[in-house]
Image 1: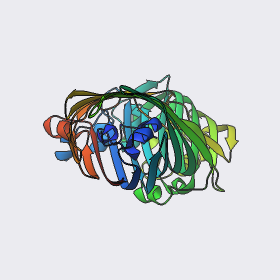
Image 2: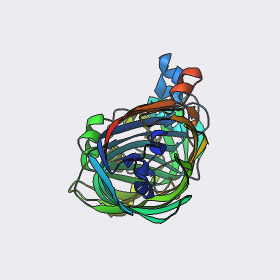
Image 3: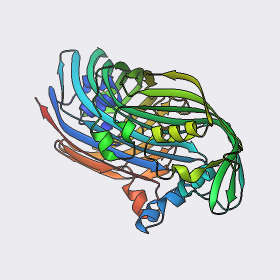
Length: 431
C-alpha cells in the first residue's frame, strides 16, 4: 500500500527477500535462501510541496509557510510497519506469509487562502476563491495479512520467467475524510475576523473508529491499526531474469498492486454528503466566522458547527462505507553494469484519482538507484522524482540481515528537500 517509495533501494536488493516480494510477488521465486524470516521492518515518509528542510532547522512557523503562495497545498505523511513474516521456496514454487500495518494522513489540493484563513482566523483584505477540484483532508489506518505464491514458469541456462500473486486480508482500523468539491466562495476580513460568505460546495464528512476523537494525535493511529477483517485486495506480477554465472545481468518485472477495497463498520460511523451553502442571514450578517474552527480537533465538531449555523443540507448518508486502496502499476529493471555494481530503475504510477472521496491516496514516483552489492553487504544511493516533493536523494546500507536507509537525507542536508523519510529492519535467511 505504498504511498511514497517505501524501502527505496533495499526493495530491489540482490539479496532477495520479503520486501522484494512486496514490490512484486513474482520475486518470491528468486528468494536468496530457501527460507526467509522477517523479524521487523518500519518505514516512515513525510513529503509536501511547501516546507523545506531548512525551514524546519531555522524554526520557521510551519503552519504559516504551508499556506503561502497560490499553489494548492499537498502533504503526505505515512508509515508502513512489517511484523513477523515467513517465505520459502520449493522446486518451482515459492510461498510467503506477511503481516503489515499502515497509517496515512494527507492534505490534498487545499486552497492556500482558505487554509490560511481557517488556520489563523483572519486574513488581510478580501479574497474570492473558485476551485474546480476536490480539496481533501484524509486520514486512514489499517492492518493486513498477506498470503503469496509464485511459480517459475520457464527457465534455461540464460533466461528465467516467474509469475506471482498475493491475496491480502484487510483489517480496517480508523478513517476520516473531509472533502470540499467545486468550492466557490468569498473571504472577507471585518475587523480582525475572517468570514466566509457567498459560498457553495459539495462536502463529504466521514469518520470511523478512533478518528472520531481526532486524527492528528499519533495515539489515535497506533491504537487503531488492526480492526476486524473486512476487506480483501490482491497484487499480481511477472518477473524476468537474464542470467549469468554470478546471478543475473538484468532482473526486471512489472506488477499491479492494491486491487481492492475495505469496509469500515462501527457503531459511531458516519459518512454524509452535504450541499454547503453559506449566505448572509439576519443572525449572521457577515457569513461564517472561520475562527470557530481553530480549536476543533475532530470532523464531528466541524460538522456540528456547520449544521447548527444552518449551512449544510444533507444529500446522502450511510453508516458503513467502503474505501478503495491506492491501486498502482509499477515497473523496474535492475541492471548489472560491472560485477558487484548495479543500477536499478523503478517507476510507480497510480491508477486511481486521489481527488475522489473514499479513496486512499498515493503519488507517482520515478527513481534510479546505483548499488554496490556483495553477498553480505550492500551500499546504495536512491534518487527519486516524486510527484509532490520533487527530486530527493539518499543513502542506505545492508549488513547481513540488518538494513537501514533514507531516500531523502542527501538532498535534505545538501539543498532544501521537501521530503523526510527513514526505514530500518532486520530479516533472517536460512538455507
